[in-house]
Length: 251
Image 1 (cartoon, rainbow, N blue to C red):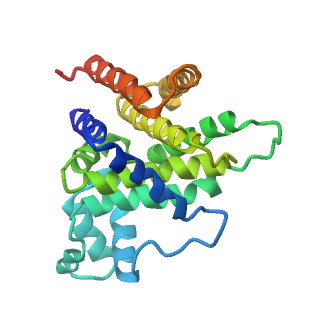
Image 2: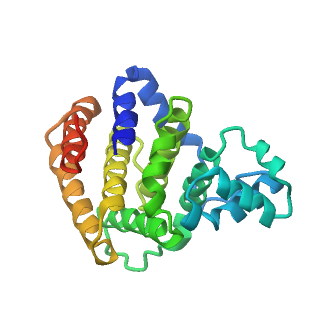
Image 3: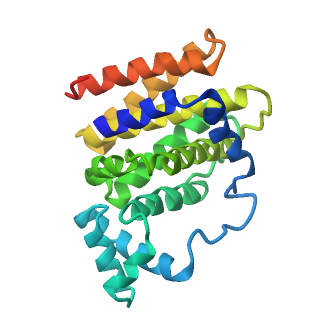
């Protein structure tokens, strides 16, 4: 929790131009049903990471998982030197592959669904992917790795990419200034809900689902009354700190 707060604070402390550029980069990103998926990793790295990923439920996002993955894939332990960021590359593998798979996990057959309902469904499906992959018990450790200064830019870019993908899959085609606001707000909501999920002991993460609904409603209300992303971000940062305090973090 504390590590994620460091990431959130780092975002808010970035110059406005840098914050905007994080979202501008998403204009050229791959969307899962526009084209065939490009290979995210070279073959050797893909083989090791895919094998290591199978060990995450037991070993977490650790060097041990990478070493076991290399062995399973038929490579020596030294081959893990390919991953200059160490276990953080395994964290990124989870984030990237689950984002790219999201479009295949959700099919909207009911044409009456609006964009907002689709966004909710996509966020829930992405959270279910965490549970199905067995990473939820280890996600606090992953967040710790994401909070390291050298890893924050990549972590934020991937969060922005996920937000962009969700809006795209939901059918949002807006090109006005709300493009940035919606992606910034969804990124903040998703990050908070994912933290909540790591603490949730309810059946099938029902409490997480309820928490998501409260955050989405908050965004809907605030979005109609606040005129710019920075004002909204300031409000959400306060809510984020309150959430952390409710989980026992001393701030």
